[in-house]
View: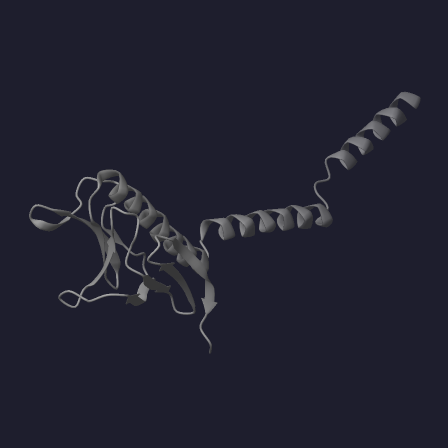
Length: 174
């Protein structure tokens, strides 16, 4: 009889071990999965303000690169600013010619929902186009360019001395 009672006790312990998960354990797992999914979705969808800042910083950096190229090559470079993007040119024998085959100075289209809403240039407009000139001396046409989405603005400013820099974010007043 003793042997039987030990076998029955072993069966009871085995049943208790295989009884499944508790409600608390399931809730903790669901909570962890929810937090992980939230973190992934936040990292996948970019913040529109970050995209705006990145575009302003990109323009400033590419303009500085074009300025250095103008100095190194001893050529006049120019940037044509449009509402949806910008393109780089160099002054050659045939006048202003678009820069082709250069991965950095290629024409750029702005991402969706980002526009150049204001471009102020110190100098004349040619054919109603906005041109910023980068001289081989390191000087440039003074300018201010504002990138906008629906709620925020970022600007890039340059002075005649050759300084180019993005300016802090501004929020549209509602």
